[in-house]
Length: 151
Image (spheres, rainbow, N blue to C red):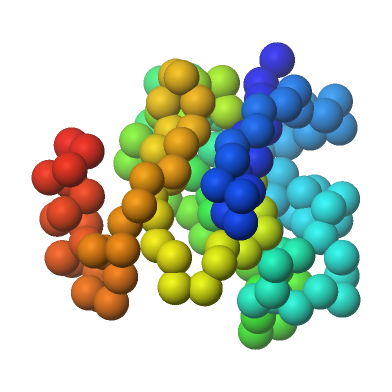
């Protein structure tokens, strides 16, 4: 059975649990919508601590079919207040699936002005300080992350 990993940003703890039976036949944007309906208060602030950032591999990830190894990322939209999801190709969805992760839920809000990187591998998840990545746009931090952790 696949697992749900919950990353608590405030306490910097990653918890692993079995995915609920109702989530078994869901993946990608369908799973994101289900998580939002089940766990996010409809009247919460989209940019507040009660929203979740959800990473969900698609249902067909790992089946060797072309273009199936996709990952969806979503949450409650600050623009519409509804479900917002985006998806991408690459290897992220496949890597999460190989770790047995049905969904990665980023929960709560970190303390102000504290930056860190969430690392995920077969041993679990952990947080490492990353204040040096703040305020540099996208490309410089991405280069630093690749140098530090590999690609």
